[in-house]
Image (tube, rainbow, N blue to C red):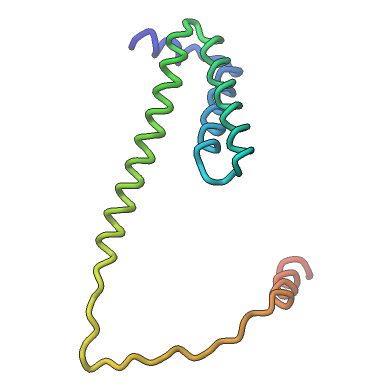
Length: 129
């Protein structure tokens, strides 16, 4: 581990940019923001950035280990956020019964907002003096 810390302490600017490019591209490749073609391109960019990062390291094995640690860290973050979301969802999903005397009233119908007038109002408030 001391050698990996030494590698981390001696990162150049190019290696840092490649590391951030890897993390961003890897997240985009696995996330649902891009279509299939975009995810494939982001995955290729992540793989290329990871290989270049490892090659530019003092010892390529330490660079590869750092890439694996980044992948594992992102996986742990996703697992922890899923577990937190699931547990909070379970706590909040318990339906509270309505009192027996409460009468359920229907909501009054509302008019659909007009998008053009809303855009004009936004334009007037933020742009016009």
